[in-house]
Image 1 (cartoon, rainbow, N blue to C red):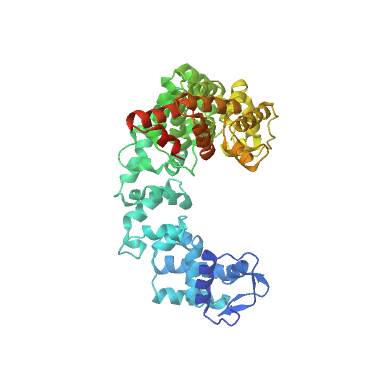
Image 2 (image 1 turned 90 degrees about the vertical axis):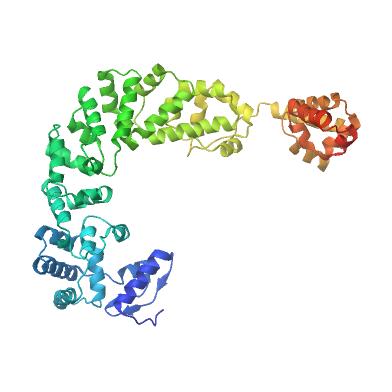
Length: 504
């Protein structure tokens, strides 16, 4: 590698490819040189590759000025657009520097860029989209077919100006371009008329500009009816457009039909205007997080477990500040845990109706981990939880779990298993007996009951002993299951007793 002699452009390509595809933990390199680009000696390889085409601030400033002169002076683009493309498209700029052989001479860089762009016209949509906040991997599929120059797309520039003049920054405009690209193809005056329609609803300029960034979809098609319905409900309970916009996040996108459904549900379960206002003001996530999807899932979950409208209303009134998605995920984790330990459905419903508020705020460990750490069986865990559900607060992620104290049941059960195995012919303290004790699940008293039950079906006791020794899992099944299987073999398949006892 130390003998590598390539152009700066090749070195740049190699370094970028290596950074994307390889791990360099703990590796260092000796000097690599390519043109004016160099990986210095004794640098970690990742850092060295990143610095292999580092552009000095003075060179970058000269390059940006040359780009501005080209886009504004030569190509005739609007000054603000040309300036943004020059200063806010670093990847595009570095690619141009790479193509002029990585010149880092401050005196030559401007002239080199001007000469290169004059004889090698570039796709102007690339720096334009990068200046809107897109990464190269994101804008590749957005480049218009058959066009290279921005002036060829007059509607794009016209609608871009409308949004700029309305106070929307170029970086934020990228979100609109990504989620509602059709907006930039509107004919003259169409976008302005849509904005005017929302102003006629009473939204002021600052609110509407943020709303368009948070929810670009409102600019698609006719006036968004669902949004208008949401705004009407919020105003009816005393929450104005200023509160609405303050509660929205520019990092999210909103489905106003989902928000509308969530609001309607909260009204349907009996919240009066003042109560609804207080609830939403305290927990705006209920209607805005994932556009109300998690709230509706939470309600469906509670309803399936038997909660009434009044219980659900009381639940929301006592709700703590937490992400609704996290709350639902915690409830689901707890529900699956209770199902895993075979708790009865009615008992699960009772626990969720009375304890959902804190269950949703706790993230339980997985069932297998709890069974191992607590050193207890499923039946005992069910008994502990039914007696005091708040015991589960001690079993959350990150907590240190101590084994449950021995109740003496396990010792008694093991003694009964040992006595039973001795009775059917096992030798005391033998390896076979130790293996059998591990294979026989359930309580010791249950083994004797199931053994006696099989004998009571008319089978010879000596044969049953041999069956149990050969297939211990027989006694791990309930009496009803064993009876059903024997009945099927005898009455349906007409199997003889000798054949049944000969199966192992």
